[in-house]
Length: 210
Image (cartoon, rainbow, N blue to C red; front, side, top):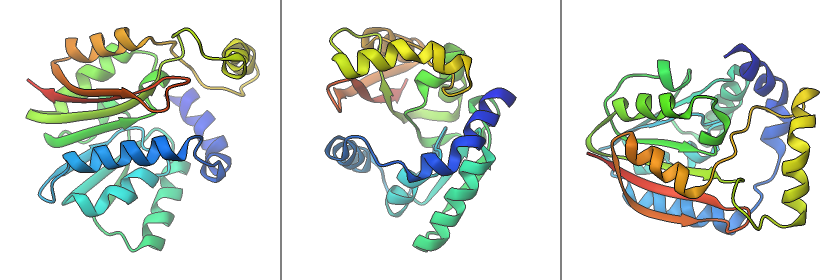
């Protein structure tokens, strides 16, 4: 935990200033997620970073608990929530294994699953926190897929060198079928999927706990 936490603490302020890479794709999946939420829901977002998405969705749920490995990320999130006048979002420094237990109506993990080194264990921890019939909503870059294009192909090739110099975190190279298979094995039935954006494929998945 320390290594990843240190990386994200160091890059929190620059991360917070970075623009969203594909705003139409982000807004579309934000809308799809909102369509699944109810104002009576207690929701959890794991690996929420600075909490920007949670703050945008806060009016759609009763309460949303935000967790992240980075204390610096969470401090920025608290600042943003205060500026937005949002009072039903709480911030907890945690990873999937020690996040609040719930059970929650909805658990979300956006742009997180490719960054954890034991995805199978994290998905089991997530499933344990979703009530029976509840939802798991995630969005995950799947950079093991073919046809990434020159720009992303070069970036993918550079990741190991960047990691060597502390310029990139751990990254798991996932394919869409592998990701969906692991989510199903964790105890979920997938009810909606799609790539937003298409390249590189960022797989949006809505799954219901069995």
